[in-house]
Amino acid sequence: MNRIPSVSLRGGADADAAALARWARAFCVIRFDLERGQLVEACFPPDALSAPGGGLDRLVAFSSFPDSMSHHLPRHRSSVHDSLFSFRVPDPSSTHRAFLYGFVFNRQRQDERLPRGGEQKSVVILSHAPYSSLFRLLLQILGPLCFDVGHSALAMVASHVAAWPAPAPGRPMELPIGSAALRVHLPPAVDDPGPPPALLPANPSVPYGLFHDADLFAAFRGLLLHLWTLWELMVVGEPVLVVAPSPAQCSEAVAGLVSLVAPLLYSVDFRPYFTIHDPDFARLNALAEGEVFPPMVLGVTNLFFLKSLKSIPNVVSVGSPNPNSTRVLPVGGQPLGNGTNGTPGKLKLDKLAINKFSPTSLLNSIKLRREGPLSLMTEHKEALWSTYAPTTKPDTSVLNRLIDGGVSPRIEESMSVVNNEILRRHFLELTTNFLAPFGPYLRTTTPSEGSSPFVDPPLLPPFHADEFVNGLAARGPGKFLSKRMRSNWLDLYRRFLEGPNFMPWFRQRRAAAEQEQQRLWRQARMNIDIEKLMSKMSELERIDSFNAVERYLLREMENSGRGSADSIAACQKLKGDLQAAFSVLPKDIQQLLLSNPKRAVLLQGSQEKALGPNGIVTHTSL
Image 1 (cartoon, helix red, strand yellow):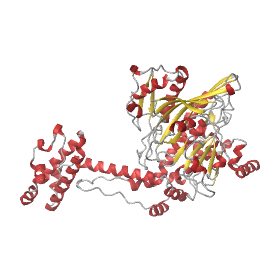
Image 2 (tube, rainbow, N blue to C red):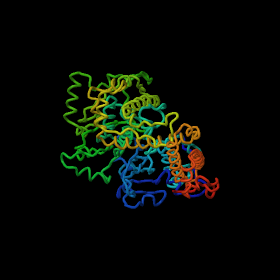
Image 3 (spheres, rainbow, N blue to C red):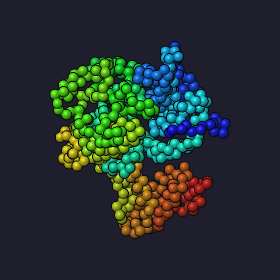
Image 4 (cartoon, rainbow, N blue to C red):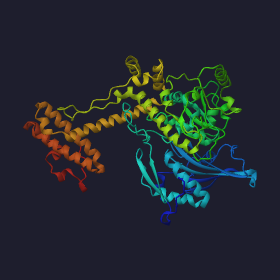
């Protein structure tokens, strides 16, 4: 967005707090005071950070700044450096383990005339929702606006956000802000199971998980061959420490890792930008020697964590300490460059081949492994240190399709979009194929033709991990995975089944499948011709069917209190079916059934008797 749209307070009125809360908890300006440290300078709503449990204001303030002023800014007498990054912190006001997402526009200004040669402020959007694609765009309006007009910009933008419709997770939205409109496709809700695991989503540009907008190519440009190992680490829920020179680079890398496993629900705790002020730091720092590090993904810039969290088994360093761009969005390193005169070209695999054999590369690899992550204390380098033995092989056909943007930043940014599409499509396909063997345990059924839908749907097949692994071993991994995995591919499934991601994902998918099956059978009951069905039944089957129709009618009536048109129509259809089923029963059975007065109301009452005030079906029980 090249131009800041004109923004003013809507109708001169304050933002509606309840409407604003659908999108954001707070809009803040945080100032770094030379004597008092990080301070909340302004906040809207004013009491938004005064949450029960306390400490939210300090936690947000400490998470909203880099660990130190950048030493890589241009050496001019006066310079300004803007960056965007994000963080995720526990919500102290929540009674259960909930988190808040912070999206930060940080401005560092170097000026020899200022105390200590510079100053910095951050504009923060705090939300319960991980809508990074939306809040990044909004920050590029709100951030500069705060520096132009002051704190009043917070209320101005909040008034527009409060006027937005309620969020529609998983759907595209156009949200007006001043003279502009933000066009975003929100990620699916956390409880949305996503597409069935046997189906590859048709449109990879549609988000099927969190942080679909993360710049995978830029964040991991120097580690492209390691992406498949990182994908496995995320799938099985291994702890990972992401080290980067700046909050923008580490938060982008963590978001990219989380997005790598879509549409799998990622259930591990992740922190795009983690500081020593986080309340969980003390617990992690107190882990005893040999104690297993909990499943977490932590993005850090403070090298102190390399010593304090040395028990973490997987460390990846990303980014460049000398970014050659002043773009607001994170920069993922120097060009690998085989384009000439700034023109794009294909990335060369020999530039990526970290395991290409040569005496020099072998010595460097041994030295890097021997020194370990602590070597980052003296020099930042992009590398992965891990004790994990990967199963998945890098797909060179994907790497060969990636394009190098050359030396032109504008072309490089355009090519990064193309490369992200290539990488995201591949890992979406990889994850979908990996999850496909679980499909039979999530498969719904519908009544066969001519059968009665007035019976309980069959249960989904029971799942037993040992039986699943044995069956998978007999069938094999399938064509797609067999080309991309080593002979120990079954170990990856065992680790996944034992890891923290499997059970939450499987339960969610299972609940969604059961709900879909109930919907399909309900729809079949709405479409069935009851008289045709009953004409083919014996007397005993007709009695059973009458009881089943009555049972489903009462169940539907219990759910009709909301007065939805669909539920009212279903009750009327089932009431008609009940009367039709009753009419074909023997006279003595009819008399016996009518001896129950409440059932007699269902059968003999008029439509007015079956409906309550305003046409709402009233509950009647036997």
